[in-house]
Length: 144
Image 1 (cartoon, rainbow, N blue to C red):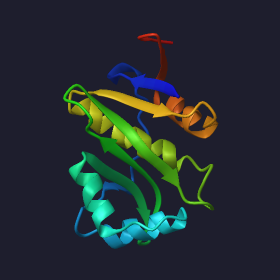
Image 2: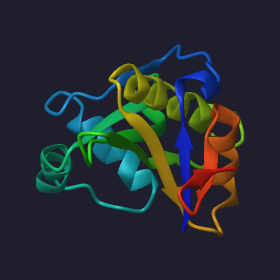
Image 3: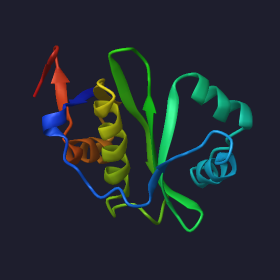
Image 4: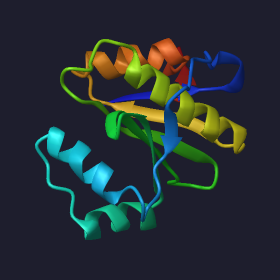
């Protein structure tokens, strides 16, 4: 597992046109269709449970479809995680995940929290996306 952090001076702003926060009630069907595109069925209980657990989802939405999504996970009073990042097949490698990750990261930093991100050592795409937004790897309590 790789741990990353982003601070306000390091955040690289990007175009957030078309990115918005998903509404718990209004956007369930939209979110469910997106998760199906990733081979998962999103039940109403899972969707609501994620919100109760501190997840808030932002997405790049175009023509009634989520192309890319990320969440701000409020896991502590001091730090919030950029989590659940994904882009539908057919829309990858166009910078959409980077834009959504930057949107969520800016929100976390504006709220006065540390912006963190954790990903697998084998997830080169997420590592590259996070670094393009301004995240730095943390090793032994210090960032690189």
